[in-house]
Amino acid sequence: MYVKKLFIIILLTFTITSFAETKIVIKFSHVVSENSPKGKAVLYFKNLVEKKSDGRISVQIFPRGVLFDDITVVEALKNDIVQMAAPSFSKLSFYVKDFQLFDIPFLFKNIYSIHRAYSGNIGEILKRNSEGNGIKVLAFWDNGFKHITNNSKVIKLPNDMKGLKFRTMGSDILNYQFSLAGAKPYTKSFSNLKSLLEEGVIDGQENTFSNIYYQKMYEVQRYLTVSKHGYLGYAVITSMKFWNSIDKELQDIILEALEISTHYEYKLAIEDNERSFEMIKLEAKDLEIHYIDDKNRALWVKFYKRYHEKFTNVISQEILKELDNL
Ligand code: SIN
Image 1 (cartoon, rainbow, N blue to C red):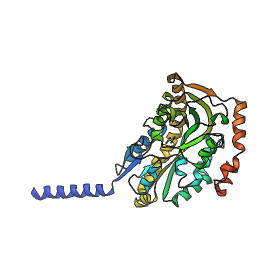
Image 2: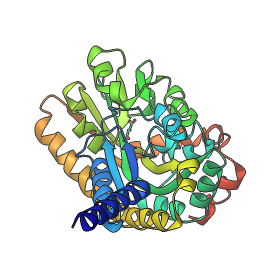
Image 3: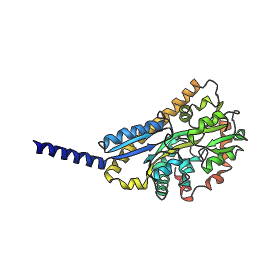
Image 4: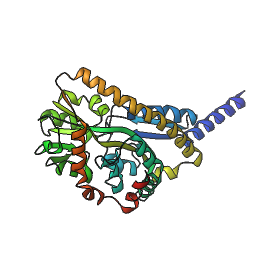
């Protein structure tokens, strides 16, 4: 009896130890709300990967920038403090300049041309260059097209932004986008954005409907211009160090779970932005919404086209020549 008990204890100890050895914990840090498309997709990925790996992979989610903002998270990732993140392309451009291709105003006509860029050579080049910087890009996710809010006046044309202070995510191209119109760009983290707008440290910002809605920016902004002038997307990343430290079998499980989560995220991002706009219109009683008509839209496009070279100078030729194939 004693021997049998001892055998069971040894067996259990061995099983628990070997389970503990193969168990991988992924800390996934992001800056938006749990309800946003990215927040929901991260949760979806967590549930899927934990199930597919039979519990060998566990994902801990840290939303709303509770651990790191999107700029510091990349260093945290490289130092293995967190293992996954999904920062915006603009923020990744501090490491790989070409990510800011997606920041060029009015470059992409619709989400389909952006998806073609993700799945074609542009996506491949971005992945390869990230690896050279110790970053493994596992997937590209959408948020959507951005619009402009501010507290000072109705923005009908680019020059209406003259003299105003706008928060940007920090890429050179986003900073040019505002400075070329005579505005002052300020790079600030997403977590501080609402309070900076409320305190009047900055006048305005650009973002998608879902980010404007979930951060309740409409509570501290007086004007919204439905400009659809630029795009906000994310790279789901890990570090090369972490990626190479796990078995091929677990890598495949992560990639498979991410592929399914990515389809879910794309659908969610479209639906959520539409719904968020409806909610903004419903809830934001003091917000004046300005729609740009076709005539003025052509003027916005013309204004930024004049500076096309200024934008493209930041991007490598290798990427630029792929644009014709989209
Ligand atoms: C995000 O959507 O992850 C943040 C966007 C921003 O920094 O404005």
